[in-house]
Image 1 (cartoon, rainbow, N blue to C red):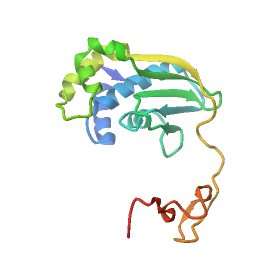
Image 2: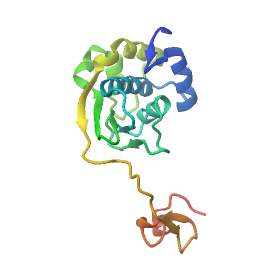
Image 3: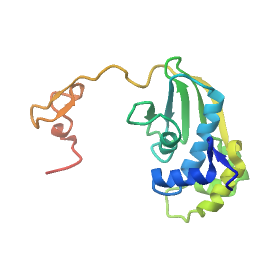
Image 4: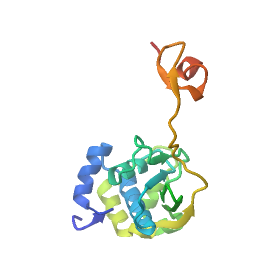
Length: 191
C-alpha cells in the first residue's frame, strides 16, 4: 500500500506519523485524513485556514497532524457533537466546505460499516490493516461534502481579560465569575 497517498503524504510515512502523534494506528484518523483531503481540495487555497471538527475523537488529531490548525493556536475548533464531520474554512471570508461520512454509502464497505456503526457494547474490532485497505479502496466514495457559510467567527481573536482568583491566587479568565471555576466547585482534582 506504499503507493497510496493520504492528504499529500505517502501512506507508510502517514502511518508512522499517525502512531507517533496519536499513539496507535487509527481508522478514525485515516478516514478523517481523507475527509480533510476532500474538504481542502474543494475549498482550494485560502490565506487564513481554520477547521472545525464535530467530534472529540480521532478527527481533531488528523487535522493537527496534517495542517497548521491546532487546538493550541485556536485555528482548530472542536465541538463535542459526536458527529464524524469537519469543516475547512477561511476565517476572514467565513466560507468553507463541510465534509462527513455518508452512511448511505457504507453498505458497500462492510468492514468500514461495522467499525463506524458501533452500538456502544463490547465488540471485536476488525484488524487495522484490513479496515485500512477497505478505507483506501473506498476513499472519497464514503465522503459527502457541501460548500458552507459560517454564521460568525468561531475563534475569538480579542484578548481575554484575566485576573487572579481572590480565593486561590491563580490566574483565570475573569469572565468566568468572581472566583475561578475550581474555587466555584467545578474542580476536577483535590489536594
